[in-house]
Length: 260
Image (cartoon, rainbow, N blue to C red; front, side):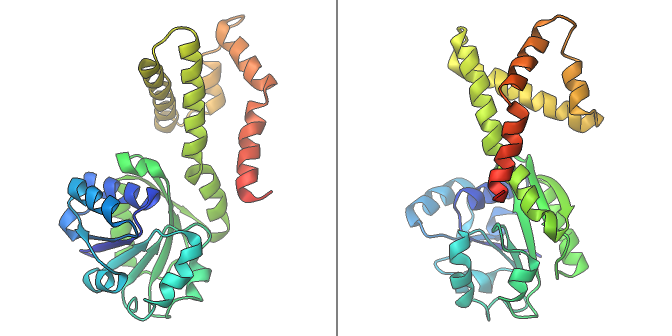
């Protein structure tokens, strides 16, 4: 696979384009993009130096693989107009709710396809990419795509029935974590730390804690215990968070995303 097309360049599409090009996963001259907002797309192109396609058929013609990043309520209408052109091409999708079986009913049998659930930190090379285990890509193409995406983050393989839960945690998670960063920053400002510095303190703390867990495999509870001295200040803060229902609030947030 040499050329990659993007149908849709909104928040998720642009994060993927930026992340993959910046990480060197694909050369900008091999990227083609089609979007609904020409002025914004031209400004983005000036920054990232990809090619703009005026319509979806011309984009498909130029590309080996096409990634769809449109809104869920648009995808079926979009596919109606390009279903035939996609035959023999690799079709990738980051549209939540559209898994292998759903696309199987919408595409020609000879259109290999894969559902990927990413998150926006891929724009800075720290994304989560959840690949649906069920797919119809040739093994060599699947491996090549996995290697490409892994340059902009970490790739995980999930069975079809767990993709929605993965999306609720990792796909929606950046919004939840950003709220934590904002809250910690507000607390720092309350006690006199300048706003810009407060964001840096909160974000670096979250980054360091996440890296500690990932690199050591340490249970999060052990990391927490390592900061909590007997009769110390941190354990008082932990108690306040427990009283506020912090753990339940995060679980409730995932339940809300899942429609529970």
